[in-house]
Figure 1 (tube, rainbow, N blue to C red):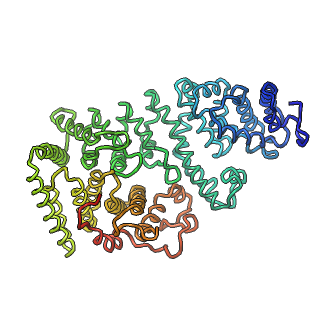
Figure 2 (spheres, rainbow, N blue to C red; figure 1 turned 30 degrees about the horizontal axis):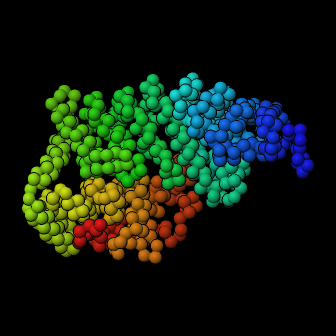
Length: 596
């Protein structure tokens, strides 16, 4: 450390230390640097801290700096920023608490041994202070990330939980994070704090990039808060504090958005809560949550299986089954032919077995099932019995049934073309009853065509049910383009923007790979009607929409052209329920059997 590079004006420069070729001298110099840095008031301290940040991001499993006291150094720097506001405002020191907390979070991401060293270095108290909002939302974001990593491991979770305020702070942050970022940064461009802008864009972008990154960081702030809460939710003793109705009711609406789609967000936390009987009771007592779980279970969301798990656990619990069965059964019967979903094998069989158990428990004092739900489950069980029966039928008889179903389907197509939509729907239902259960490709077409009829008849719930059944039968699941589009339109009719958006985006993805000339994207252009729906739903599902409406950022018609950057020619869009359905829907009915 005493040997300074000739071209370096700073004695003890960290970057010169890192160039030291003698391992022993390098180790001693880094050790000294970490010990002395928090007590120094020289300008330029942010440069070595940003260098350490880069190193932590690139090599989070490297133990060199861990063994030399980086955790102690970062904790001391955070405390210095919290206690010495004059130092914090000097030079570029305002960046240091952010970088210090980020460095702690990066090194505690993968290695339990590192988290134990961090706890021993007393990093939790200053992180909790940042979490409480002592500085700004930018520091809250990296603090909740680091605390989430520390709470992940069994050996270090108690140290986090001993700070009793952490859970409540995380819950409040999950509820308010989007509003905080919108009102403190996004809303007023001319009032944005300069170091926030620099951190968001690394000095590489203007206002537009700042806004995009702010949306991404706001989503991360919420999702990382939920991840921290999730660590507590695995412990039954914390479920009472977590399962407050006002918080639970908001969870289904908390999602990563298109900017943070890799996070399970609210549905991930609900899944953890539903694993324990103490959590299932409060969830079942909130009808809005069960309804939202059914919507997610039917959707093409990456976390669809989590919603299905929640519903099945609620049904298997005799204390909650009777409260949710009438809401859950319609969604689950639509999903009963879903054979594989991610790591879930024979998922449809599991659904059928659990629904059958619910029906058999009908006679007990704890169970009541409505006649409509009984009818749905009976139909499902009959279809399973029919499948077993068909396995014993001669091949020729099955071929006759399939030919008969085709004839009836063509009759339905003819009625559809002539404008008799109700008659066409009836014919498709008749064809479904005739078609062999193993003729999955043909049944995909029948359910999808009937879904189109329901759309034109303004029956969105029935359209969603049939489109979902077609998507479950399709191979691979959730990838039948026409059914995705029809369900996207049905969700739009019901005002379910997120679900409609996800289906519309998947529809566009499938069109780009489709061999069907009616669906394939010409010249790599997105179909106009699909683009219109995606733009509409991106406005409706915008991450900051609720906060913007609360703070006057969206006018009374729900459109803010400045915030959402809507083109002038797109200011008047036809609704899917009248223009797109009538013009695009009839042409989309399937005349031929499903292609491979």
